[in-house]
Image (cartoon, rainbow, N blue to C red; front, top):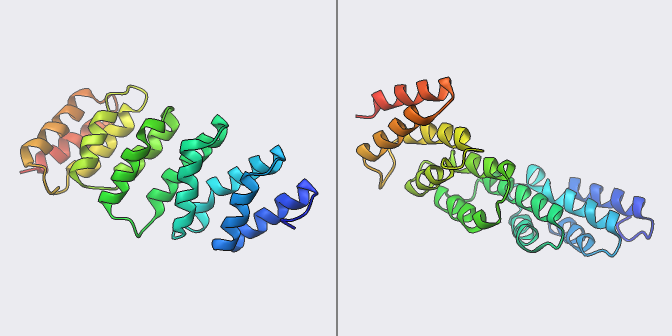
Length: 197
């Protein structure tokens, strides 16, 4: 089916391969991304962008998504690649917190829209390490995603973080308690702040 000249059959074949997964399926989808047929190309990008939901341990999908996110010609393909890559990072259990934060930092310059910033914040909010807290603090300066960043800061600042003193944790929690416009986030920040001793 993936070799069919009929675009509809070709796309059906790509969907079937995505369900099966594995390196051969991924290679077929990557090949379809280079197709001269725009509908096939667009569908292959959509399939790849949701690949991590099916096969989060497939590291080759991460690399393919990164290439798509950083060098696709169409903006819509870059956006789908970036979304898929951030989902891949978040769902990959083989990556350490340090690796996840480093990968988010690597693609940060390609993140142009609040939707993808929120996805990056979701990754960082699950990584209780100093570099994640630092990046979340920077993201909180953007009013479009400040509340999501504040919520993630509260989530990780309540934990012991190597390389972050209690005073630093208190300071970021105090900032959230003062600046957040969300009552629940402010309350969580105050409650967490009272527990940081």
